[in-house]
Length: 222
Ligand SMILES: C[S@@+](CC[C@H](N)C(=O)[O-])C[C@H]1O[C@@H](n2cnc3c(N)ncnc32)[C@H](O)[C@@H]1O
Image (cartoon, rainbow, N blue to C red):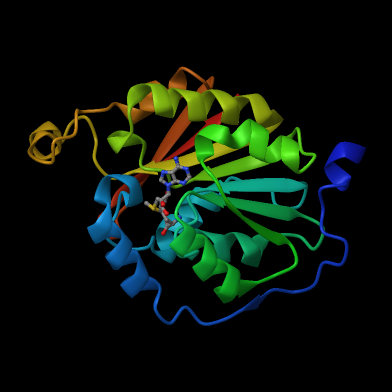
């Protein structure tokens, strides 16, 4: 069934993506990571293998609205757009203006709406755009290095906006098991799967080795 509040949010004249080759993605990503590694949470953009694992369980044929949290230089964004239907909208949120400006110039696609904003303000960002329900949330946020109340605020809002068949995907590099490495980085061990389980009834995981560094992808359903 079409929900009018969601149709209003869709772009009016979808066309195929015009994605400009990602010339300096890595240089920008590295520069921003050097400035603030805890926020950027990685030294390199995600590989297409990691992106594929994040997107594998999303039903792109029935999705109307997809939200990406933490777009960075658009590595995952491009892979979402490759799979997206012509009438589906992708809203990409990032707090770093350098990244948002970069993807605005690099990814020209009428289905894609980059948003300069904070994931913890998801409800108001969506409300401003007339959106209540979303079908999938793809998160690359570095939850491990976030303050506990901040990551709780983000996950609570994300779960509230998903429909009953919706799902959230999230990845993590550093596990609670790697506690020696975490403490050398000044980060407290964080059991991401258990944390996600507070908000979602079903949390499955998949290890992705073809990424620097290797990561675990969590797929969460209500
Ligand atoms: C690990 S990077 C992922 C970038 C990209 N999606 C990828 O996989 O290559 C995490 C991204 O989340 C953004 N970020 C961190 N905290 C955020 C927050 N509270 N709200 C929105 N974006 C945030 C960072 O600026 C960074 O671009």
